[in-house]
Image (cartoon, rainbow, N blue to C red; front, top):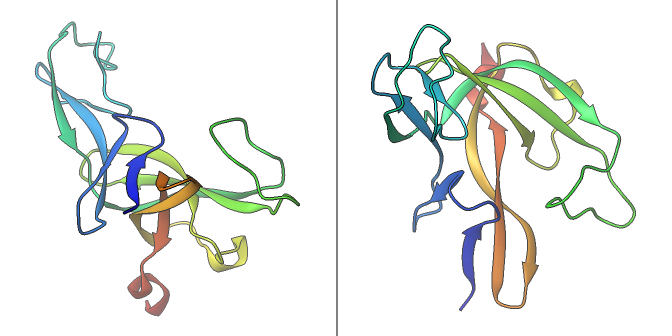
Length: 148
């Protein structure tokens, strides 16, 4: 049986049904969200709180910016040989007012993307070792945003 787990522990979760969610934090003092989860201080310069609640962040957001990666990223990324460029997006999570970077699912090019398009978080296999899949999060365009 193949086990599946995030390549970076604590940054996101994947339920048994494959549903992925980023793990962030919400400041108990002012409500500011952070990703990855804050552990020592609030990112809001007007807040002195050091208390945080771990929360699952929104699974959907809108593309804030995008580009293609024509360079090979550092570990834990495991590149194909030969290297194949892929798309990166900055996604604004509306509820949290937070922008999160991530790779787009395979097969999507910069020509398929527009600022403001809705995307959803999915889990994908970065690489496999024996019977263990190492997972990353990716963003997948939501079909409805193309119909608008």
